[in-house]
Length: 112
Image (tube, rainbow, N blue to C red):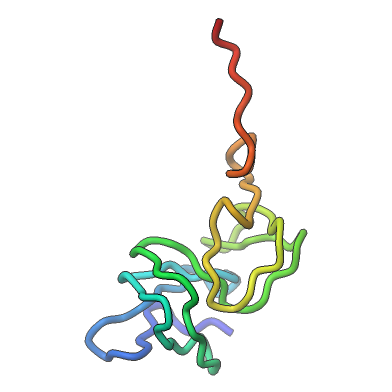
């Protein structure tokens, strides 16, 4: 369910995340979050497991390996591992549609 954009969680003065499109299964953090911090994602209370900086993505529902990661209403990659609600979504658990490698692999180097 699309929640209309900015979502205020624990503190009414400091929105925590932004859902960019109604079809997105990730949201973008609008502020730094701390490990152990409780946030509401939709109607679910979620404990953030790791500290994350502003601008990073977290899952809005559980995502299975092979499932598309949707941001801006389009697929930006594929989950390479199970991702729990509220978990960080980044190169450690996603294969990008835009880079020729995942964060776990090193790109080939043609330099002499």
